[in-house]
Length: 127
Image 1 (cartoon, rainbow, N blue to C red):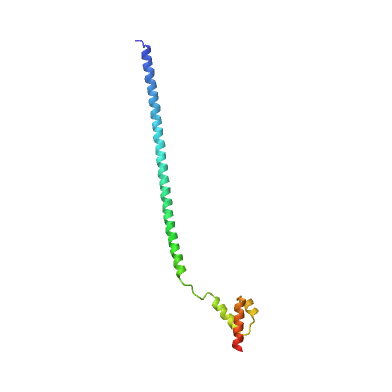
Image 2 (image 1 turned 120 degrees about the vertical axis):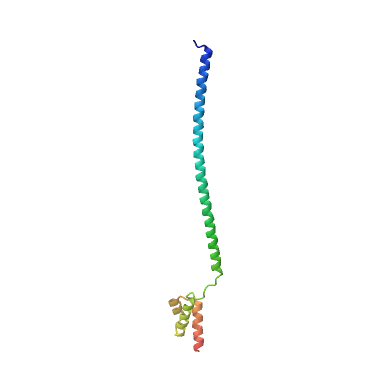
């Protein structure tokens, strides 16, 4: 049995068809691997976005708490005893003992006008 040209062409076409099918199967497998890798990357990115969203929500809540706390503190009256009353009481005592304006400024750091007022009040009281 001899093969004719037609038979050789059919055999060649069949072999070529098998080669093309093998290449297509290999490409399909590669595409499936790349699709799986992309799916994993999308899942990682979704987890990262979720984590960032949760962090932003937590940060927003914390900022709201701090804002409420700041507002509450601003509305709370501050006590008058911040140390300046004691300093002026001491300045008044020193003025009563005869301290000069410059003595009060140097020793207690009161303003000149306040020291002059204390000394003039002492002078009026002793007159």
